[in-house]
Length: 248
Image 1 (cartoon, rainbow, N blue to C red):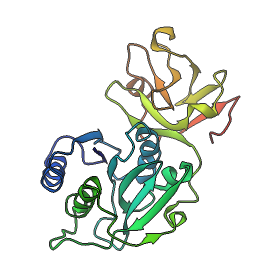
Image 2 (cartoon, rainbow, N blue to C red; image 1 turned 120 degrees about the horizontal axis):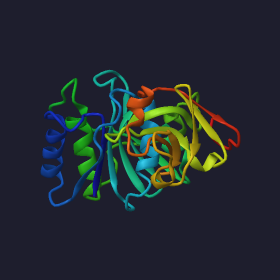
Image 3 (cartoon, helix red, strand yellow; image 1 turned 135 degrees about the horizontal axis):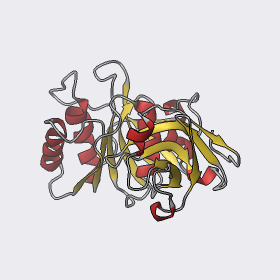
Image 4 (cartoon, rainbow, N blue to C red; image 1 turned 120 degrees about the vertical axis):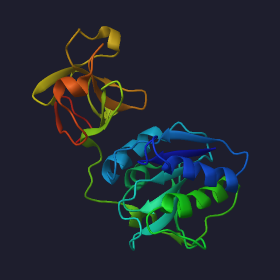
């Protein structure tokens, strides 16, 4: 299968145009939009989400990953092989967290270029055809490189801020719940949130934190909208009080 992780959004022509190329270049291979509305142009937030939300994909899945504010510049184009899956996208830090946490990894340049390459839509013109080739079983179209060259070393292991707001108003953070004790409270927007295992355990009208289904800390409000209640947005910082492990 081919899984898309992009900031293109569902409305508009962009995702549809990418699908058209994938269907043309890799007919019969299913395409699943896992995360079509990553935070716009926010490569760092997308890097933490990509690592968490691609972990349950089948082995040999091809992940088409495009958050690319530097499209058309001299930034590179790469293929990554990590934990049994393929990833295709720009060399701008997007694969940094994935590679840092991978048990085994390889990386390759994308040396191939299509006959027509727009300066503003490499997701359609460059990365989608390469993803289709990998899904057909072809080799990466370029030489191997050191995966360490794709890392952003100044990014923390876990990101103590909101990286995505879903349509329920829940705030997904860049913190892995495994690094935080359930006795810890999380302070965000001047409110302290205690751990609750489920929405059913949470008090009405009281924000709380829980481990979401992809292993990340999420701020929520039972039967309510936490992002609206707390005035949260992508990038809102938070602090863990007590019992912190790997998170930082």
